[in-house]
Length: 94
Image 1 (tube, rainbow, N blue to C red):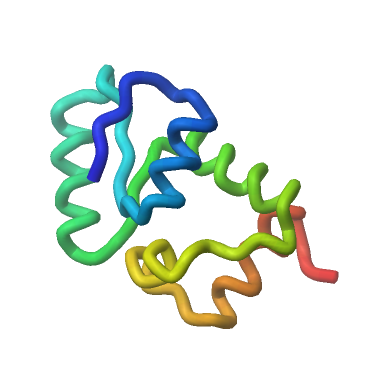
Image 2: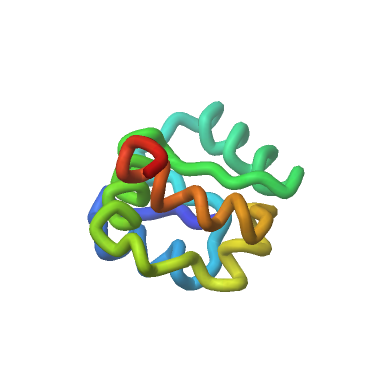
């Protein structure tokens, strides 16, 4: 879980690449931070919707790139689900 200073795409993607499962901005409400911590503690992943869009955009531009093992493990995705992430980022299946 990480508390980010801003919504900088590079910082966010570097954190994802390092294996974090939760990322909230410093101006996020305390209720939303609590929700994020609870989600991550249950084994889920959490980020603000516009940051999630950055992640999808990244995979759209780098469709041959797959998340690292740490991310796969943190998100609990199967190999097949990982294969679907770039397709979802492009907006559909080929």
